[in-house]
Length: 118
Image 1 (tube, rainbow, N blue to C red):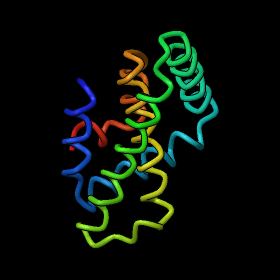
Image 2: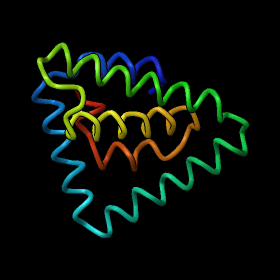
Image 3: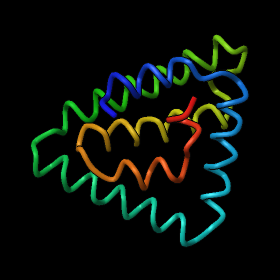
Image 4: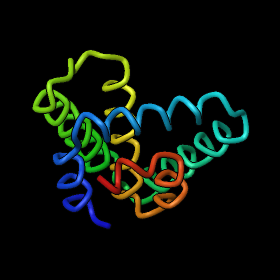
């Protein structure tokens, strides 16, 4: 998956997909093992983004992904400031950084498959 494919999927999220993704994030945050796996993936992404000199493209991709989620949420009639929407937007930004870095995508998608499968 490339960044444009991810963004296209995020733009198509509906209220139900956002709710399911938020529930997955909530479940992940209640399991210590899942949270450690998530942060391990984040460390790997940060390392590769730095090593490959992709800080700006990764940050831009994360911002575009978060924006795509908030626009989709508004279109679905959700408040873009709702904590569920914010959590999903943040996770989408993390996925976009992973796609830009070219790694850890499977681990991150496993933690929140509704973001990629919408």
